[in-house]
Image 1 (cartoon, rainbow, N blue to C red):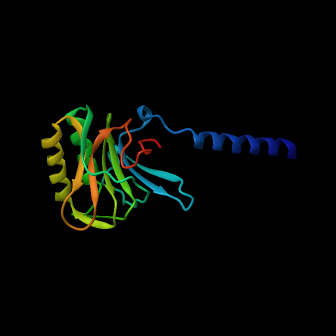
Image 2: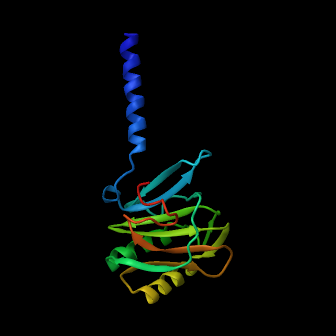
Image 3: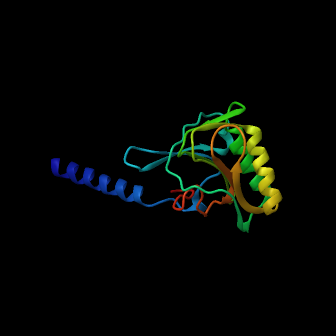
Length: 178
C-alpha cells in the first residue's frame, strides 16, 4: 500500500512539473483581464478574471520589463476587438486614478487582441491619460494597426497600447499565456 501511494504521489509531482513547464498557447487563452506577478525567484504567476467579471476584481501587478517608447505594427486587428480589449483594461480599474508599481504590467484580451499597460517606474495616471494615448496610437498607426506609445502626464514612465495576443509585449520574452 505504501509503495502504491508513493508511486501515485511521484506521478502527480511529475505531472505538475510537466504541466507548469508548458506555456499555454495564445489561441487557447480566454478573453478577460490578466495580472502577472513574479515571486521572489523571478517566476511569474498569472491571475485571470473572465471577460464577464471584468471590473469586479482588484489589481496587484509586478514584474521586470524591457523599456519601450512607441512603435506601430506589424499587423492589424479587428477594431471592435481592439476597442473591447482597451475598454476592458480601462474599466478594470475601479477609480479614475490608476496606481501601478515599477516593473509591473496589466493587460486585457479580447479575441486576437491584447491591450496592455507597461509601467517602468512607480506612479499614478488618470484614466484619461490612457484614452489620450489610445487616440494618439490610432492617429499615428491607424485605427486597426497594432501599436503602443508612452503615456504622458501625471507621475510615472509608462507605455500602453495593443498587440496580437500571440506577440510579445512589455518584455522581449513575455506574451499572453507565459
